[in-house]
Image (cartoon, rainbow, N blue to C red; front, side, top):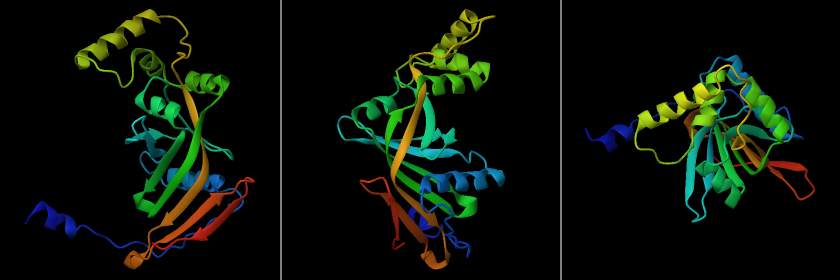
Length: 215
């Protein structure tokens, strides 16, 4: 059997549970609610999301990042400000993000505008990180070429020695971004591929409206 034929047969049915939205006035808080439910079910990497950006040549790029906070304004993540994703954001702040929790038959698709969080917010989060991760933020010149992996380890060792016995402050090239959504789709898998999909869109006055979409 060919690989294609095997892939044709990869399918499963989904649960009968209903798609229930509790935060119609601000669906960003519903993202938080769904994430809290995923965390309460002890799902591994429940806060992982796919972040998609577009570079200066209009070429899309996707990667997994970790959501570190969600409030009424948006979703916050942290990264190196010299990374490819940061360069993409500098060029075009429109991004898309996607959460998927297979065990719950749930998915959230987000479109939004990204901006940097305040230095205070970045400082506070950086201070909460494990020391080794703090050192890693100084050691990694993210997305840049290296000769081999040993070079990365050497950079880490050098930074570890430099900060021996010292408090590690946040490097200026590292910090947070917040995605401020203007469109959010909540998806719930259902039997026979008749999935439920409700879309929220923010209008020019900052008010949210919603409508159901065909699966």
